[in-house]
Length: 234
Length: 336
Image (tube, rainbow over the protein chains, first blue to last red):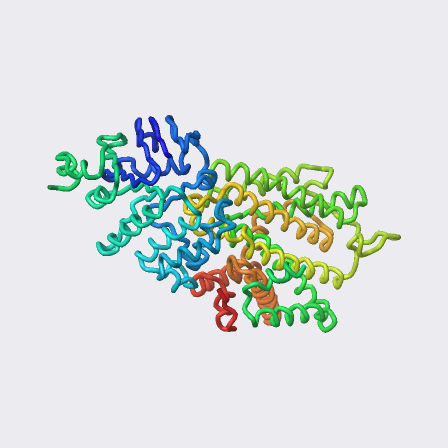
């Protein structure tokens, strides 16, 4: 479904990604874990068309989409929930959601998607007329996810969805990701929260200083000594 | 038409429409009840309401700070005035040339800035730079009068006055009132349309808007093109109302600043903000002048100091502008 090969990217003269290749199959949850600065966000943004890689390519259903701008990538059905949630604080919850459905692929289905999102997140329905900046951190994360769903994505790229949330809310976000996956949405999850991500993911990649250090199923990586020492402090 | 009317009314608070109708009615009968001095101030208020509305599209709606809108006023003024003076072309036709000239300049600025990611302060500097070098260029362009200025003949015999925009202040009053009303309606349509949503997303968080699939370059370009196209007719009005054009004045930085004060003080991104801001600034500045004159104090620059104080008070106590606070008082909040 999604195939990234030999991706290089320099950030301010420093190599952020170097020969990164990943494969994501339809219906999978693929986690990309690693420390701060390992290149996780660069990888997500290169896939999403938010930055142009120096070398390498991105294929989507066999089509070369390397360097496509994000508005074209979104139309393909690749959605993203960016780091730090990035909601529009002075717009209402409903306006935030509606903006998510303005791409051509989702526009005609706007009301249907809105109903679906409200069914999934009743809290958002309660607060639909409230200004988004007044929501709690957890609610804002739900809004960010809901807004992404408004674009009817086939694949969602999650960048650090657990960042800044309480442990209980982190559980809720991970449960949401899992249920989206059960509904058939493919997930790429970028996380610093290694243990939980590996438990959730079918497969995972460990990114270290811009390179893929390890790859395998979530369970295998969880059991791997190097992963346990470096990321799980066991 | 009914569809348009429906969208225009849309989510407007129920009390807004009667109030708007009353305001329009009052403005329509105003020339019958006031003297020429008040009328001249009313014209000034409506002029600033109009250009403020046009500028507000860029800053208030799309979040792009332009400090060089005098460029579009000046190009509009010169395009129509030159056609009139040298070729006898009526301003109503000249307005198309004016809009064309402003759009061409905006396209160059926009393409440069938005293609190469020039944003924020740097974008504002770029807009100033364009206005400034146009001013200097026009200063050295004798065909259009150069720094000596371009003067429009006040009356032309044998031609329809209205068609050539030669007439008494009352005529200019109704022209600028129609322009302000149209600008208001147009901004309302843009605001409730899809483009308005895109602009607001862009203004709030450009990166997030991009991530959601909004073509940032395209919507920024549309903002600058629409805003400049709307600003140019203000230049046409200026040229035919004042009959004299000097590059030094019309392209000056001061003009650019003057026209953005109204929307900032009235309320950025709101429809009534530019109108209210223009009213507050112009009327209060006139009152201040009158009071100072009555006291026998001639203070040069009092007006600028007053503008500064207004800005200071609003920024400190009403950062959203006067209109949002007033709207809450009047029970005119958005229904959504």
